[in-house]
Length: 357
Image (cartoon, rainbow, N blue to C red; front, side, top):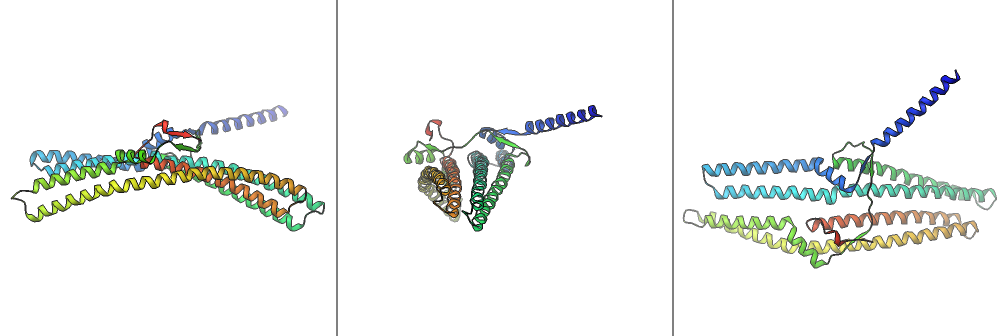
């Protein structure tokens, strides 16, 4: 009987170990680079863009065949222009996925992982504070109200932890969705985010955007197409109304290109300023969190010495937690702004222009 019981216990332990081992092996480790590669292969929105591109290409091929039967330069060029627009839209969607959607979802998980850690520390501190207040209460140095205040502080800290844990679950599901993976797939991220500054001037930024932004390329193609249509309609067989329409279309495309040439530098300037502000704010909030950490350490010592009230101690602990959350949010926002700025330039920067700090 004893041997049978020992065997059953050993079997249960073995099965439990196997089960936990299997769960660990099912966890998908993902770097940011791997996540981007998976997303570019599986993302449903990108697949829709690919189908649209295939449709534009098919229409272009159809236009070339029709042009052999009945020559129509305008119809052929129009189909070619639409195909180019489809290519640009597809490439732009890839950039949006890589530089914004996937990266944002990846960083969001990292943010909530850190937030969970912050809130766990807050819960631990709240428990320690409650114990200190209870000890003082038992000695007659604290009131029942102060005990209640400490208990409320602990409940609030526990609620903050629950919210952070829920946010982490949703963040993981959001990443899985954008990558085209099962929503319940356990993932472990291998990269982290930190504060990185871009070594690039405003003039360099504007020039890079003017060289790489697809809108300018499209506007230039549309302008050339409008010129072609006007030149083909300037003959005695085309009505004045048709010629007038072609002239208006040309002027419209000229204005559109001119507008882009002015709008993009304005956009880049605002985007760079916003990025620098967020980088500065990340530095400031980090220092503020360090200051609140020291303030809380002092408050604990003062409370133990009877120099401050329970409310002062709890307030100091709440301010510390909030400062840590603010620093985390500022770091997260600076990283998002950085990616958005790079996308606004039309693509990735050279690694030499990225500097960790």
